[in-house]
Image (tube, each protein chain N blue to C red):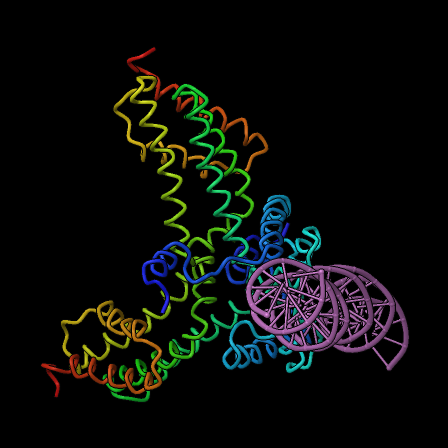
Amino acid sequence: MPDPQTTAEAMREAPAQKPLRADARRNRDRLVEVAAQVFASDGVDASLEEIAKRAGVGIGTLYRHFPTREHLVEVVYRREVEGLCHAAEELARQHPADVALELWMQRFVDYIATKRGLATSLRLLLTTNSTLFSDTSGRVSGAMRSLIEAAAASGKIRADVDASDVMHALGGIYSAPNTPDWRDRSGRLVKLLMDGLRFGAKNQ
Amino acid sequence: MPDPQTTAEAMREAPAQKPLRADARRNRDRLVEVAAQVFASDGVDASLEEIAKRAGVGIGTLYRHFPTREHLVEVVYRREVEGLCHAAEELARQHPADVALELWMQRFVDYIATKRGLATSLRLLLTTNSTLFSDTSGRVSGAMRSLIEAAAASGKIRADVDASDVMHALGGIYSAPNTPDWRDRSGRLVKLLMDGLRFGAKNQ
DNA sequence: TAAATAAACGGAGGCGCCTCCGCTTTAGTG
DNA sequence: CACTAAAGCGGAGGCGCCTCCGTTTATTTA
């Protein structure tokens, strides 16, 4: 019988999946990376055979790692959300709190922009897979909350704002129609929002 | 300029579609009929080529009439709802009001049962296409309301029930798990519901 | 290092989707 | 009825999906 403590911990951390063989791990990572690019440029209905080819693996390998298109999309999506949240920490480290917040919101908006085209399929995935939804939206709003609290604590923005309100304000971007000047508009929206947040702040 | 009244009426009745040529109409009807059977037995992911073949037409013909799978599914679905509502009138004509209600509810339940397997795809279609949802649910609840009101008016069931309550009660069927004795269960549910409705009725 | 074995690879093949366009049929017109 | 234009037909063809299994490769063992 195996050491119960080790087993239990391993189970909690990585549920029942032994480490992949080196080549398998390489191929898997490569596939996710390529898929992220291809989905971004061609949409989530892009050809999986194309993705396999660009990743330099056979279609069979793709299907072994990701039994359905949705599996692959989910992994890519989670990775992107992770990147977004990681960027929040990075920006917080390298800029004054209010600037970090502004830069991050801009990046968030850009990210949403790239997802607009995929909205239908992605919405479907997010409604079907409720775990995915709660995980990712929790991560994102958590990142935003940290940035806002830090900015408020430093006195760079007013202290009386609620993170979820700001989240909703950014959400207004969704309702904007698909005009060509979309990017500019959203950029202005973020600036406007920041002005509002800075208004009446203690420290400058 | 065309006669405005004729135009307006034609527009309201059949929005901008001139009558089909005889052969086209024949093929279209045939396709819908075959599709209904095939969807029922194989699910809404059944092969469209199979449907075309069984209907004795080329795949091109199917696609001309129904540009996407969803179009075809929608037409089939509307037809079935129509059938269900028509059955309500028919039953009302041929049976005492309470019996008509009971028979119809049984039929409704059976109908839902056949749709259980398709639930995911159908739910998707119904959430995507909100017109379809409101049209059909309106039709169905209307049919039910008529039956209930007639039964209440004739004194065969109590007069203090609300049609929407009964609708909800039937909806409880959805929550039942996919056990093998599903049919029997739902049959008993309908009987139980009818007993409740008859309890304390004026006329027997 | 060599052999053994378990893990992973990859692409052929079969099937369904959907478009495109040359051919057929229908519904008017004289 | 004969003719014609418009409407409709249909299936070949190209592409993507996904499975299956013979071959290759990483890891373990001796």
